[in-house]
Amino acid sequence: MRILVIEDETKVGCFIKRALEEESYAVDLCEDGAKGLQMALNTNYDLLIVDLMLPSLPGLEILKGVRQARIQTPILILTAQSQVDQRVKGLDAGADDYLTKPFAIDELLARIRALLRRGSTESPGVLQIDDLALNPATREVTRGGQRIDLTLKEYALLEYLMRHTGRVLTRPMISEHVWNQDFDTFTNVIDVYVNYLRNKIDRGRAKKLIHTIRGSGYMLKAD
Amino acid sequence: MRILVIEDETKVGCFIKRALEEESYAVDLCEDGAKGLQMALNTNYDLLIVDLMLPSLPGLEILKGVRQARIQTPILILTAQSQVDQRVKGLDAGADDYLTKPFAIDELLARIRALLRRGSTESPGVLQIDDLALNPATREVTRGGQRIDLTLKEYALLEYLMRHTGRVLTRPMISEHVWNQDFDTFTNVIDVYVNYLRNKIDRGRAKKLIHTIRGSGYMLKAD
DNA sequence: TCTTCAATGACTAGGATACGCATAGTCTTT
DNA sequence: AAAGACTATGCGTATCCTAGTCATTGAAGA
View 1: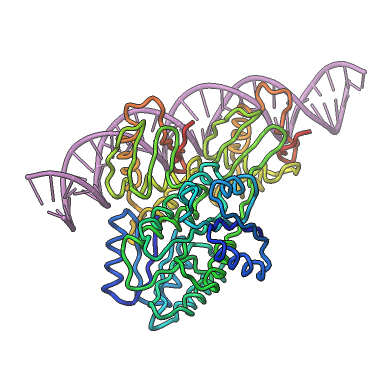
View 2: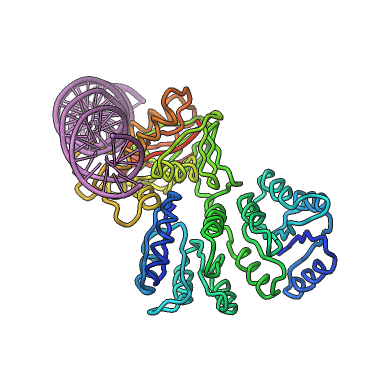
């Protein structure tokens, strides 16, 4: 975990640095606002601690600069007890938390732990096979970068196929996952929808992705 | 944005609820700790506000319960001025921020905005999509530089849509975050409000931003 | 090897339905 | 009285499914 501290008061800055290093954080200390912004933009820190009262560059400008650059690193700002509105402005400008001087070092550490804890557990989530992509989050389907509009059932069917690429999927398997329990086994709805999908996905393309396994069912495959 | 307030003092609780509702948040109020924990576990809130001094269940237990369930909803705790160690314990138990009673309502609101901002994807203060802009801090909405007046509910709905741009939002998802617990599932309120929004935002514009995904829900998107 | 033919799947058209839109009206709060 | 939140209802249509015909497959027999 690497932390950048932007603080002009040498004494306070060094104190924070030592305390953080004792907690085994990697710490860079910068006493100049403009230079600090540069460092924040150039290096991928895990956390920024910014004093709002700096001589060269107002602390708020640092916040704005960082957020404009689409950097989402958590930012903790330091303010004086009196600067209530500054503090509110800071939070609205993109800061994640603040601490008023003077503060207990234990509290600073607790807040840092809280900020760093939010680990991004994002999953990629996009299903892909050859040049066909399906994004369950946005329900967006593309082939070769081109958008494809699907109805609800078509989409449900395609998603099921894509989640089981390369495997033979029998009609009972398909109906069980794409239709609900009162599915009539003696119809050809599945065939019909596979056909719909083919029209939208394979029609006119060199590579066919939907294959029929005669006597068994269907399969999605690049080969 | 839907918020759960766990606060045993009826007077304080109601005060907070009303203040938040005036800011377009959907608010559930609970005066009992154990019940509050249940609600927090059952519903996907955007934020929890927990008073640390509760009669039935210590506030800390609520925090632990929520975090043990792997729920990462931001939590703001309320403490008395004196309880410094409580506060540190609270942050370590998974709280994201605290406020000491008595507090200024403006500060509570600012902190809520800060907490909610980092919860959803990425947003440097102002939410923007195409020429539509929404500023959560001022609750100001503009399209093409032109101000648009929205009611509380219209605003709440639009904010939710804008915080999840490009994703399909189902009716259950929308009701869960824009309305509170006494929402009636069997009505078409959501449709009606989407229609209201369309009238104010898309009506007469070349580019439509609100799209309906038939059979699924709605989506806000520039394309 | 070629034909035949039954089984299986591909495709199409049209009717039924459910979905979402819009509008008007009710209720509540200010 | 006015504004906002919500309910109720009718209408148009995208979507779903049925049912029927047409095409393909592959094995059996000539």
